[in-house]
Image (cartoon, rainbow, N blue to C red; front, side, top):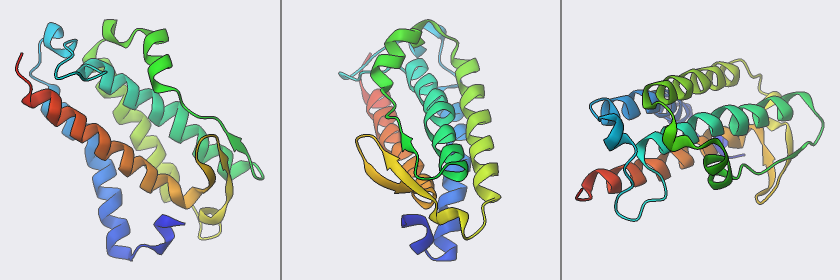
Length: 163
């Protein structure tokens, strides 16, 4: 029940930060060449293009589906999202950085629009997520924010590494 326990100002700040993430990615990666976007640095598992496609797919297939299932099903069991396996299966490194940025922005906007429509009762709807345990709709914005923070740190590590 993380989100519902936040003060209104903190909720607004959280939503603003979530909405800002696609632009942050664009500003950090826009000037990269295709070759630079595929570089893995500093022992990072993902290159920039892999980062954005991971974020796009998780936003749509992970958070988006969890939000919809929690909203429309009684106590759903939500699948884990195996980002490493999906990245390998979908060969993110061969994809377009620009298309990945657009896919993430669209999926994030859709999730934020969906969350903005929830009623007070909706926020309490719950289920179980593999690897996490009991979750509620009100947990999703905080989980999204925590995931963004982890990727911001990875991005900064990548940027600081020598080529």
